[in-house]
Amino acid sequence: MTWAQRLKRVFNIDIETCRVCCGPMEVIACIEDPLVIEKILTHLRGKELCVDDVCLPESRAPPQGDLFS
Image 1 (cartoon, rainbow, N blue to C red):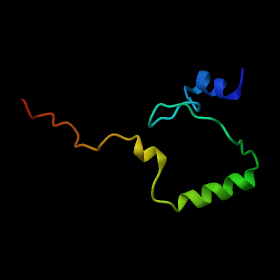
Image 2: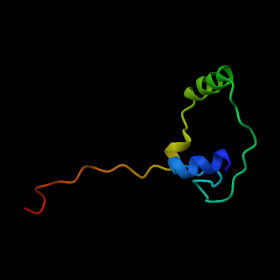
Image 3: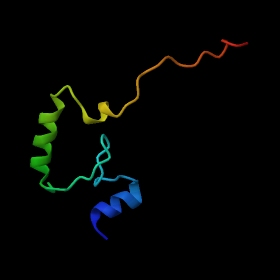
Image 4: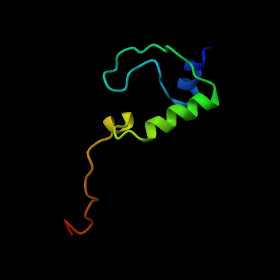
C-alpha cells in the first residue's frame, strides 16, 4: 500500500484527485527536509491567495430562530 493510499484510507485525503476539477493529479516531489518545508511555508504565509479559499462556500448570516415564530 502506497502512502497516498494510506492517506486516503486513514484520513480520507485523496491527493491523487484535484479538488477543483476532479481530474487526476500526479505526485512529482516528496519534500521531507524540515528546513525546506519551513522555508516553503514561510514563503506561502505572505501570499494572500490560499488554495483552501477556493473550495469554501460563500459566507452567510446565521439562521434567525424567531423568523417564523
